[in-house]
Length: 223
Image: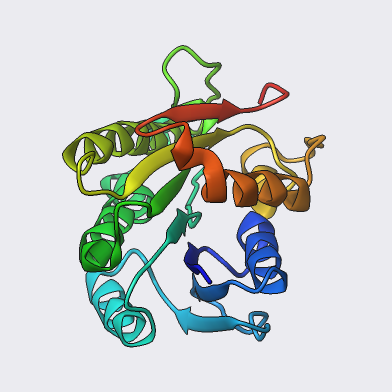
């Protein structure tokens, strides 16, 4: 039985992923700031504010008591600000990077003792973070943070290529989530959170057999 950790597990794609792994009988640790909906079979839910170093450290200590190994880590938690660049502040950029890059990196670092050669870390990125893709006004902090995540994924795959885990990034296009509504009010995506969760579920189990250090665009539309 594989042990799975999912961040951003309380809504959207993260919630659907948590339910999928639960139904399939995996042992799941679900991390989110709000865990009220996460009373599911095979799931232990912990409150985590991934923007805070102390919160990450506290949760990892609890995880180490539950799991002696981590087979899959899905870094799904994300933060977005839709604001013209001229109106953004230092704090705006810092808050986005704390969730999308800094906290994610710290969580991976503290979990390193639990990973093994066949472990798979799946970072959930955005098509907007890929060089040459279409960009949209107001998303400078968000898209640039996802670009940083893509490069971080490449760097970690190189650093741990001999010992594991494998690291890959899925750069998602439009999925009908609350975050999409924040970024593009009124836009209707053709992909539901459950459909995307099904794809990520399968990729997390098998993708590292074929990929390591790759950022893979998963998009049928623009955005």
